[in-house]
Amino acid sequence: AQSVTQLDSHVSVSEGTPVLLRCNYSSSYSPSLFWYVQHPNKGLQLLLKYTSAATLVKGINGFEAEFKKSETSFHLTKPSAHLRDAAEYFCVVSEGYKLSFGAGTTVTVRA
Amino acid sequence: KAGVTQTPRYLIKTRGQQVTLSCSPISGHRSVSWYQQTPGQGLQFLFEYFSETQRNKGNFPGRFSGRQFSNSRSEMNVSTLELGDSALYLCASSLASGTATYEQYFGPGTRLTVT
Image (tube, rainbow over all chains, first blue to last red; front, side, top):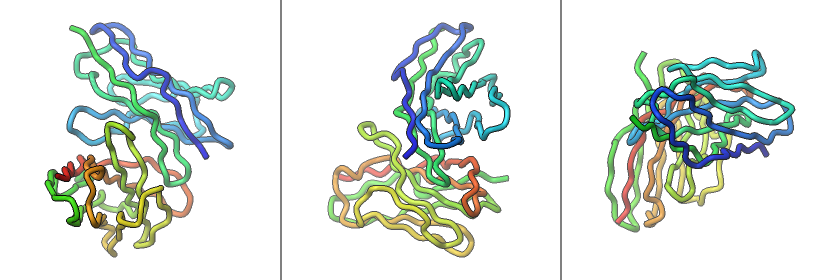
């Protein structure tokens, strides 16, 4: 079975500084990986996906993630945080049509 | 293109009752998945339907069931409600066919409170 581990349950950054959200995955074969964001009282929005093409994946709202097979990692970054980035972020691995979610990382952005 | 819609958005039920939640996928999407989100357990997969057939089911008791109609709309039903069923129930749709992997698009969820 595939799984993901989000290494930080909470990340706090100042507006305008970089954001790093860490995710490690476990998979017996080449995985499909995703990052989703959930704002309070909202559904999940897809930020980006990795499906064995380029290892550096660009997503929406300035986010990007790098797939590193040797480290089994798929960390999410953004060069400059904005107040609207405050939300919960989920790293997700796909096992066919079943998604397995990490526990989530709550991002707080200080003005 | 309209997104995934879920009805109702909020629901309050009493223990022992049953509830039906509805999900309309994005036009053209034939796969619908359901997830339960709680503060303690996080996001957990309930089941997935494709072309009216349940292809996969998570580790939930038989009180949780679902179905999909020919127009890809889906419903999930929870019978004999328990307090622990209070959660946000999320529906997601995808183009997925066969075993290909496609990203899933989520609806806003139905907030179920059991008293």
